[in-house]
Amino acid sequence: MAEPTAFAAFVATCRATNWVVYAKPPFAGPTQVLESLGRYTHRVAISNDRLVNLEAGPVRFRWNDYAHANRVKTMTLPAEEFLRRFLLHVLPASFVRIRHCGVLANRGRTAKLARCRVLRAVPPPAPSTPPEAAATLLHRLTGVDITRCPVCRAGRLRPPGLCTTLLEAPEASAPRSRTSLPAGRPRPAAGKALPSTPGFRYNPHSF
Image 1: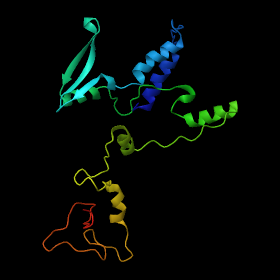
Image 2: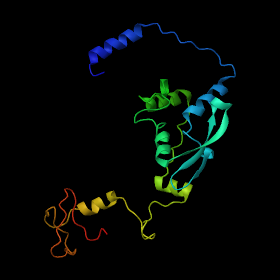
Image 3: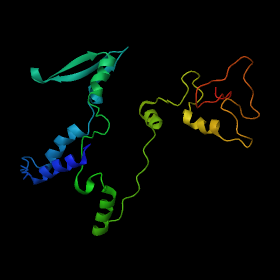
């Protein structure tokens, strides 16, 4: 694909090939096919009911030994090894389990679906609700509030991005240097050097 001419020639040879797709009706009907594919495309590496416990690091879970009459056994792994095996089932970036074609293909899907609705006189779907925030979802499922300070258990943690606009807000006065302070704010103690990290200013009210 780095050379458009060579890639176009390769595509031309693929188009010239008389491809034959072998397809036949499934024995148990299309419902059985969808259920079989759904077990591979819409599930995680291990279900929650197979997890036994997690104590001081090791993770115990149940597994099926197909070599011995499909017997259910229990395995214990260190947490690091368990996570390593679990992440083997996570697809890399830009990889998906299901790729759509036709009007559902990613390229031009919005325009094609809108045209199909016009031709079939179907009203557009209702706007989808925004996804639930990660902190809200985690609190609802586990009861853990990741926005609460783990030290004092009273304050709230705020992402640094919320403070960036406050630090970078322009003042009504003349432009100041990188290490200057806004008017009316206390200066650092004598002998305390200002941070020299690029892109940051000293803010005595941050902590």
